[in-house]
Figure 1 (cartoon, one colour):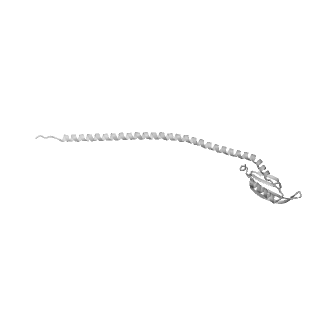
Figure 2: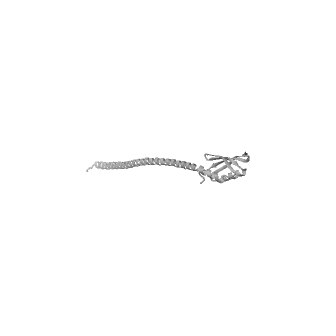
Figure 3: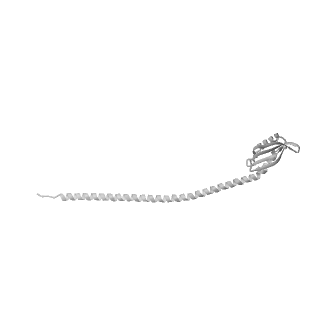
Length: 183
C-alpha cells in the first residue's frame, strides 16, 4: 500500500492562511495609519486656518480699539465745546441781561416809589427805597412777580420813616433775576 503524507500540504495551507491574515492585518494597519495621518493633516490645516482667523480678528480688534479711542476723544472734545458754547451763551445773556432787567424794572415801578439802592449779585436782586404807603409797595411787588424777568420776590423790611417832613414807608425787597427765561 501506498502511503501519502498529507501533513506538508496542511502545513502549507496553514502557512498560506497565516500569510494572508498577516497581509490583511498589515494592510489594515497601513490603512488605519493612512486614515489617522489624513485626519491629522486635516486637523492641522483647520488649526492653521483658525490661527489665521484669530490673528485677523485680533488685528481687527486692534484697529477698532483705535477707532473707539478716536470716537471717545471726539466725544470729549464735543462735550468741551458744548460746555464752552453754553458758557459763551450765558455770558452773552448776562451781558445783555442787566439792560433788559433795568428796562423791565423801570416799566413796573409806580410813580409813588423811589429806589435808593439797587444791587444785582449773581442773579440776586436787592432793592431799597421809599414808597408813599404799604399798598404801593404791595402793588410794586405784584408787578415784579408778574414780570418774566423776576422770580421769588420777597419783602425783607418795611418801616415808617420821615423824610423832608413827609411820612414815607422805607422798604427792602429781594428777588431773583431770571436772565435766561425772559425774552
